[in-house]
Length: 454
Ligand SMILES: [Mg+2]
Image (tube, rainbow, N blue to C red; front, side):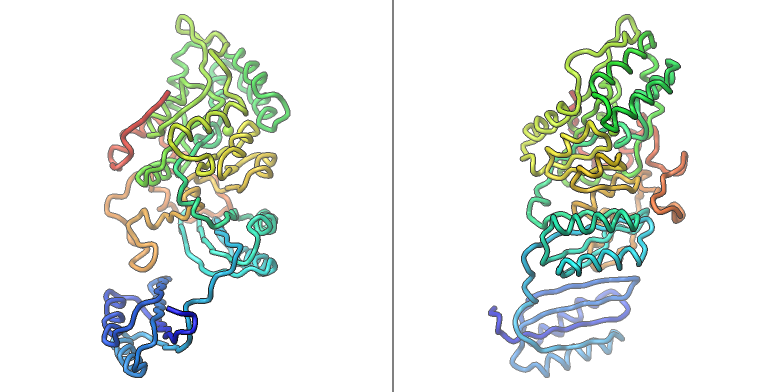
């Protein structure tokens, strides 16, 4: 079609019911028109369907046909004549993902205001998730994504929401490897502190961990200091600590959903292989890299075996896993919370600071501060509702698939009041102990079966 060709825009609004789309296109078919564009939005069972077609020889006949259909469906219809396709989108395109719990209208107003201040236009809006967070994706054009990111980051901090700005490119569809830190990212808390609690040195170790994660002291030295405090611990403590591990909410949903789509996962940790290898196997994570505690005669010696996985080592592991997964580094995502994740976040195509220390938040491409790891999916443009069996557009978006997996139970919690609620003990199913995960996943079915753990 040409830019000057006459076109008709048919806009139908009203209460949704089955058969609307079929009835409208049957009416349009009588005029022999071609479809140029279709958009459908469903909000609380209220439908808005827009169809752009080339103008037929007899526009009045088409108008009569769709008006009759609309009357039968008890819906309103508008038919507008015009020329050409939709307005061409301007250069400087971004995906802006807004995540709030709750997402207040005042936050939306502020963010939309800053987008307008940048001279940009919002071309499309779509909901990615409704619970436990509300996630909305905006397609924006007409602004430099980096400038937009700076503007919106300030507003996000002030409004207590997460806002991620990603340049719109095909690269988002190329992402195939997600590399996660473990302590305080994939799982709650720090394993070394749990081990230290058994050795009676929890407070001492926690103080060193905090300083290391802030970036105040060298990671390797701090790690060796802390591990020395564990000398003499019986190795059975590792099993006890493993059983006490709480996986962050949304982690299994994310691994399962994206795993089905062919994504690969890696964990890269300054923690210990005695824990991380089991975790990787239980969660269906493909690659894992961590430090190994030396054990002699069934007791921890207080030393580490081999090279220490530190800040630089984490970035090296990301590159190595990307090569093994056959994806370019630009097609990777890294998620972490501590200073020793900074190189890895930098090396990835998209670095995400997850409930991170300020030093990490400021350095990362984007920050997620809600305590749900599956929020990462919304940044990839993958909606939670798509996973639920409801359509991304149209259909009943509130529909649930009959076999709701235990991992998804946190969707059914009562609405959480605080802006960024941290789930309490026992409240969220995803906090199941790691040891129980394999069993639950077997019930969920369909996960990636091949697990390669070093
Ligand atoms: Mg961490």
